[in-house]
Image 1 (tube, rainbow, N blue to C red):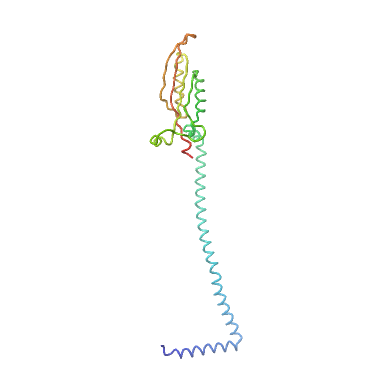
Image 2 (spheres, one colour):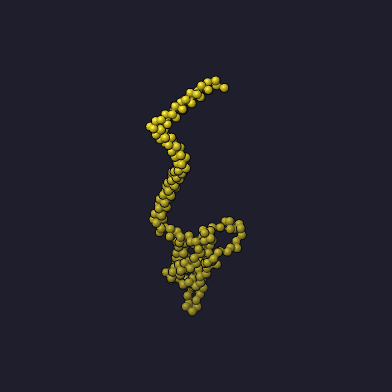
Length: 225
């Protein structure tokens, strides 16, 4: 054990007793000491009291920074969406044409009206017009095998057949009709076309029968849902 501890103890004890005596005798020291002790007490308790608040403020600052970063990302996305909207508005006419060229439904009624208009324009009487099976409403049912579905999962086709009867002298009108059908905005696949002649005994003229068979491709609407 340190041999001088008793000596130091007595010295510090005398200091303490001296301060205590001065504290009792002198009012100014008493006031200053009480102020110092009060300040020390207030400081200690303030630290413990303010610590949760300071931690909360730090968390709030961190959260605000995170939200500011999120807002910056959202602003960037909004700007990108605005640019995309402007581009979409500029290409609106082309998009409409694209939707006509590559429809998401079979739309046999539109093609029917187009064929009727073309036959009237070229003065080729329409004797028959048939359209294959098409689902207008509801889900499309398919009888194809799994292998066929893998190769044509994104598209389908609507078959059609157009037949006209006209005078053989109007052969060029029938050829022009075929060309007009091929030039439609909607893609048309011509599988076959045939000419045959017959005699109209009542009017004593040769009748030219022109038959066009083909298909109309379209996107299956359920694929895009």
